[in-house]
Image (cartoon, rainbow, N blue to C red; front, top):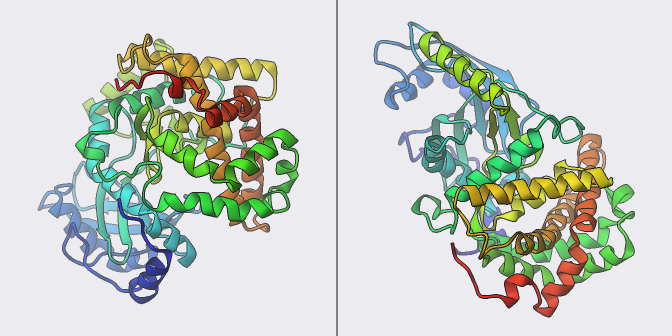
Length: 443
């Protein structure tokens, strides 16, 4: 996959980013933000929903109201859309609308890494595939994209469920942590080997714009211990700080990317499965027989000790070591400070591994838990690199973002200590990891 030029990306956005061009789905222009959506109004929404079959020809949109939404992600502008129709229809009366970021610098980032394009391709190509496998994520009611300007619109299914922030200590309690690790195993199992046609557009960990990550990490390492999350970063033990400096400053990060891209545990991974991207115990809003069926399924699930769980924000998908998703969950969402927490952390990794075995994705005689744990420990270094980059571009005046990144820094450090990252890094440099000394396995 070719690497985009930063200068070329900036040039393209300056010249053409403000142009209103036709989308590849509809063949015509589309609203590029909440204000344009309000102006396009009922007539436009009726047209696109009738064209894609969401509305029958004898039903139209009678009213459209846009509600501001301030809890969306950093990589797009979002709003809630309330819709009323002229007659009975299965079309949704409430949707999430997502557009390109309003901030110019963020648009450069999303364009450089094809972040929004990948999410668009996910909803069109992969979401139906995951739904057929029983994995829950919102479906796209309508979407359109112009890849030249980077403009897009996603009208997504509105999810009514329980959400948690990473600051909430209850986020991973009551079995939600187990549900996350089990669901990740099921997701990774679907794309094990990462050779499926539906994910051809997803880059490997060491491809394309990701190649600049070592350079950017090295640049921001200089201020990591004095910047926005210094309160936590200065607490990192000296031996770990030395390891991080060696990894980020001496070319080790690029070698690590290459190693984790060519893995026995190769799959498509989500890239950002922190707890606030999961939703739990979804409240369905169907009518009649379908609603009764949903209620019955939820009751059966509760009786079996399970829970409904789903995953949002499919922007940062890559191909590589499956445990990178687990590393990011630990680094953002799970405390491993006490002995009890560390024991639970080991149990969660075993739950993930056992689910891969149960699904017959891996042969435990060939791919061992010991090997996986070594690779997981090593992958925490890449998670720390992401935090270093995030801290480098952080607004010190944004108290919430500073708090979140500080929590992530603390949890990533705890994960390194609990999982033996220093020993794994030393073994990696010496070529003594289990994955480096044993024959390659491709399940």
